[in-house]
Amino acid sequence: MTISAVREPAGPSSVSDQARLRADKVRVAALIELISREHNIRCLAAGGPIFAQLGLISPRVSPTATVIVDPMHQLQLVLALEGEGWSRVTQSNTGGLLPPVFTRVVHPRLVCPLDIYDIFPGFYAPPAEVFERLWSRRATLTLGRTAVSSLDRVSTVLVAGHDQLGSLARNERSVSNIDYFVSMFRTSLTPREQEAFVRLVSEVEGIEPLRPFLMAIGVRVGEITLPSVVYCQARLGIAHVSDSLIFAVSLFEAPPGRRFAGFRSIFRRHPKRVMLALLASPRSFAVVAGSRARHRRQQLAAPPQA
Image (cartoon, rainbow, N blue to C red; front, top):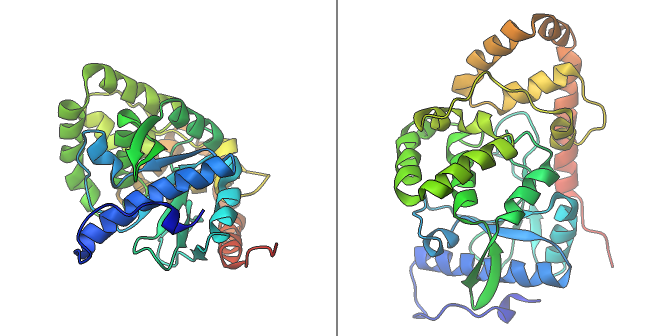
């Protein structure tokens, strides 16, 4: 399944960089849909061109295309793309101590990289269950004359809010975006969709990255929640998870401005567990650093030869 198999949107041969970016995102979404069908992989298009088709306004223009994949098939999709001329690239500027949550691939004939997500930081339900929730709500949109499985309106607002307000937002822009998302939530979603949004946050255990936004729309969020063992196993790619690692993941994934409040809340409720975890923290830091280094080696590894 080559790039040329997906028709380029009609338009003048000389187009602006932004127009080329938009056109390539459409082509990527259509191409990923066709490849995923061929290999029996479940994927959902996200961001970019799906906002307009869903009647929503994107909070920003991203230079990358995005797809969400069933965690069980993440590597299968990457290898399938490599077989079609794509290449993995290492994300050297993702920030933080934890491993990146996506794999980035590029194609020489496309201006936009593709980010393949299988984990959302701070959605503490097992990643496979998170994907099932999003998949069960999927929409079907026509992109590049191809019927593409995508996030629906509710899931799109959820994922966009996570991206802009949660652990992926590592600067102060997230604060100014709260008003934007509150406005989009109240004016773009129907009352039924608003209720579905709040339920979906609960189902994916996604309170932490969206905490300020949820408070702004009047949702009672309670105390800071801790990630589950299953989530930490998937996040770090390890089998054994200690209390110290659970606390480390919770703090490292929190936006920098909320880390102290998170630690104080956890310590107040679990003082003995926290003290024991602090004693084990040097080893936990080593485990986290090793997890990130292992992820980097995997990103640099050459694909297996056929």
